Length: 214
Ligand SMILES: [Zn+2]
Image 1 (cartoon, protein in one colour):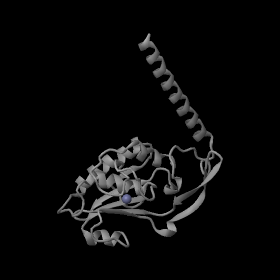
Image 2: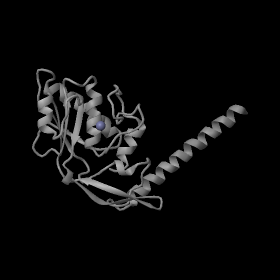
Image 3: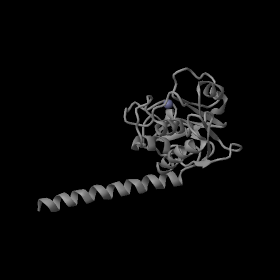
Image 4: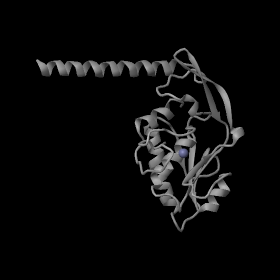
């Protein structure tokens, strides 16, 4: 009997999860694609809604002595794939022209050229021109309104080949910013935590926080 009860309890839990997923899905689908978004996580102000739903992401190494563009793109593929699986669409491209997110691996001066304000010792950074972020409306969270922003411009990101220890982590992290994450997670295990720590996989929080705005 004890086992049956436990199994029953488990099923109820599973069913209610399915119902809540279905409900959320329906709300998202039925909602206005601009201003009304159902979302799971807190801090919606730390995410930006992309104007383009599925940006093209370009990867290039500016320091082929450290890492070839081929290798950098192979790591980039892992990052793009992971964010896609996480619910945030983006497409890797090998053509720079027309890409909306451009990620470079380079030496200090390469990074400095791509990212204004780049500082010595940085592992990576993503750059969105100030005028490229505009207020765009609001999300509805329950009864309260939360601001919603968009990128209108090209987003650039760079990773210093001399500073990183975990390239895949660094690429995933910067791609997360480029896809709309402002600021950082306060959870040390997240890819979007502010310090390099060798995380390899996106956590549920990483995925949901970003996916909620796409
Ligand atoms: Zn960061």
